[in-house]
Length: 77
Image 1 (cartoon, rainbow, N blue to C red):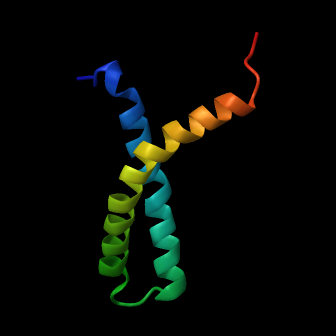
Image 2 (cartoon, rainbow, N blue to C red; image 1 turned 180 degrees about the vertical axis):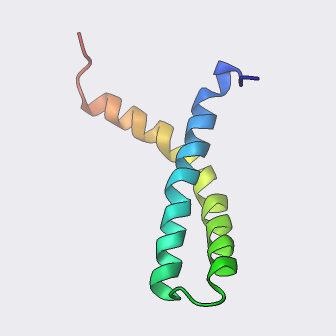
Image 3 (cartoon, rainbow, N blue to C red; image 1 turned 120 degrees about the vertical axis):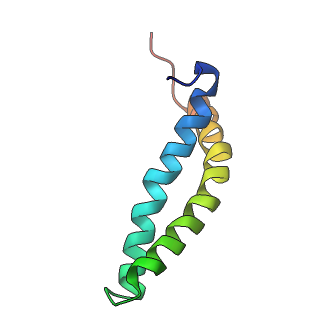
């Protein structure tokens, strides 16, 4: 089953948010807490919060960044 092409930008933004925020959460928990007994629950909580914050931001930010970039960079011929 494939998702309709009209949802392309939304799917792209959501995937980008998850792909970026989960590794960042892992690294930040590793830096701040270290690999201790409570690492995995802390990582999962941090990753969930990161995804919850980054998905809406990505859905607004990525199209905005595309519009700004389109205005700054000349089109290919």
